Image 1 (tube, rainbow, N blue to C red):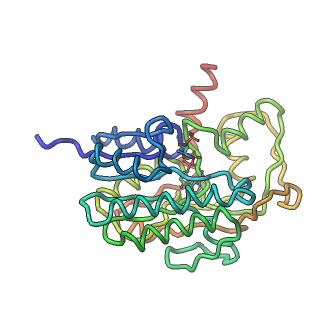
Image 2: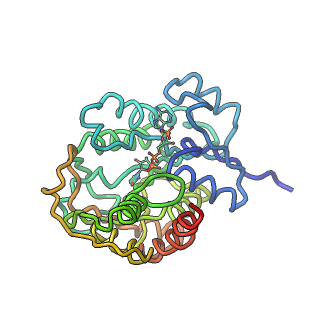
Length: 293
Ligand SMILES: NC(=O)c1ccc[n+]([C@@H]2O[C@H](COP(=O)([O-])OP(=O)(O)OC[C@H]3O[C@@H](n4cnc5c(N)ncnc54)[C@H](OP(=O)(O)O)[C@@H]3O)[C@@H](O)[C@H]2O)c1
């Protein structure tokens, strides 16, 4: 019997996507090794290299990132260390070996002024420090290691295991009975478990290049919140507000819907519509947890 393929999931102990990847990998018969801050210092390249050498993974999924979008505006160096230097280092370690690297990036590499779904070939033009550091990371990965790495861009994640927009809205609605949510930013809401399954497929195919992976359809934050509240059956008023009434430090793309055609072409997977995925998240993950609490 051949041994189970081994995957290292950087950020797999606590990250929103990392935890989903670990779950999906194990369900798919992989030996998944998650890491957190106590396992290895990912910013120390020597320690990281020996950790990877000892682990001997077939695939490394890198979900570690500086994800605090607004704080990145004032902590550019810290964001750069995680979003550019770490993937650069990983790509150098993977280059010329039998390992494959799956690195995650974001719709924030686009300014959001295009108005139709972004394809992987569209020219990125980030409008925030977070977006710019993530773009630098994905460029480094593809430049250092074009033959055994891929970049998976995704957006608007919700899923079990960590605070996320949908959970925050449900908590606010539960506590206050109303929420004010931005209606003039449009994106592709994405379930971490669906994204994880798609990413594992890309790893199995040893895909290279850039892929957009997101659930199908589009929504504003307000539409996503309203659908979540309806599914959860909460008596909550969701008020639509313009972005100018909810000022944030970092500029967000007004329209960052991702075109997933290349992903479908590569894997044969057509992502399901986001409301279906949201239903699964709320019925299978959120409501049982709310009833237990
Ligand atoms: N969330 C979204 O809506 C979204 C949208 C588009 C793209 N993405 C991309 O998807 C990927 C995963 O995002 P996510 O939402 O899963 O992020 P997340 O929940 O914030 O997880 C990030 C992970 O990085 C770890 N980390 C942060 N700083 C670290 C450090 N100095 N040393 C070691 N570990 C550190 C965190 O550990 P701790 O828990 O210990 O801090 C956590 O495990 C990222 O590349 C992100 O850019 C996310």
